[in-house]
Length: 136
Length: 397
Image 1 (cartoon, rainbow over the protein chains, first blue to last red):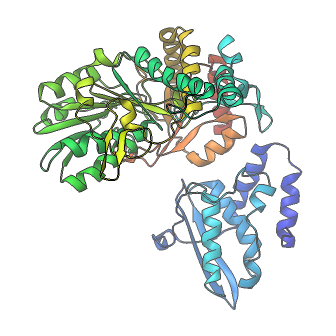
Image 2 (cartoon, rainbow over the protein chains, first blue to last red):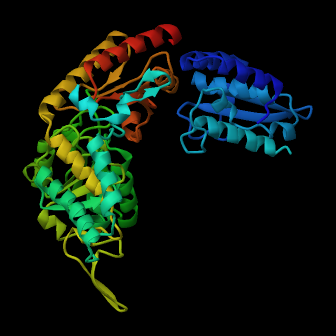
Image 3 (cartoon, each protein chain N blue to C red):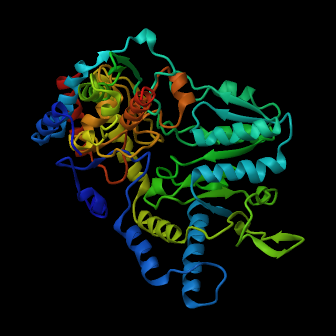
């Protein structure tokens, strides 16, 4: 899988760290990269199902480019949202849809990305991609 | 430690650290003898049970039925139906007994402490049969409100109660519950999924009418469990799953059924799992379970005290008969984040609602982190857990 340059660099940075706790700390720090989706706009439609944390996403187009707004009460989930924001924000929808969710595994953050009821990251990723697909 | 040496999985590392498995209330690890028994069966005796006359079929049947005999002797029960686990066992009561014996207006008493598997089957039956469900609340000290329970028994035909809460570790006053229920003419179902791993239960002496549990929470394989049934009550149950093995005769006009437990075990049963479960019983029989349980509750109580001293709320009381479960909610680190951070140090803990949402709603929380201890866990592991929790709190809290 080829990733956008910014994401590829980030993955490389993660792969250089042996300690998983340090990698998690880096993800937590990336929680600041999200474009906040205000709490008062959180609805059942924006909610990511199957997440243990309260997680919400909203996708819109700005000048034809993807704009992801998101937020979660768990730092890991919001950190992954931050990484997704760096990867797709400002891309054309068709380009953003090429992204694979494998980056979370390649970064050594999550062990399993199989779609399942309880895989919060995968559900979040799929929801964002579904919303982007609506604009294609 | 001898017990620990029997579990090959405990020698592995997770994220570069020795595995410390504290998710035993979800499932327990399997000793080598269980793995060997299942492997031996598939390697040398694999065949279907009850029908064929060849040697392998005989060995398979003997192995499968030995599990039933072991269940009857271990728990002192007349009837032991082998199921896929606790959930199927409870659903079996709902379908096989509930549909045959409950009518509109009857009452089923449940508690807010129940696992979803002891709530949802009754909600489904209630909708179908217009049966009323009453829930006994949980008090602030994490025990059932026994006054409400006693007052809920009018018109009750069945009481369904969890032996030991999978979230709180609280062991309910079953003796009192069964006595009160019976004196009001209600039958009693015990969800003993969390009880059997920690307590040697005498089913007949308990007086319960049904008891459901799973093998995998007591060092046995996944995919198998049992429903113990009082002999008289057994005769009032009707089969609900039709198929091979449960019939006497089949003609195009109709069928007649077996009269023993096979009546409720349609289809090819879980043969390898039954043989594995038998090996787990044999392995456990060599232990002093009472002494081990005492040790584990002391560990859980110590962990709970340590967490409380760190300002972390703990949900449970850890009395003598309770299970070794420590459910807590970190004040500054989200449970999901904490579980990942602990995983980074080799700890397996559970987070979330633990399939007990009504209980968490009563407690006013969405979920907890749960560390649950079992036979192979040590005080050293508990101390390391607390130490790492302190470090994580300092770094991320």
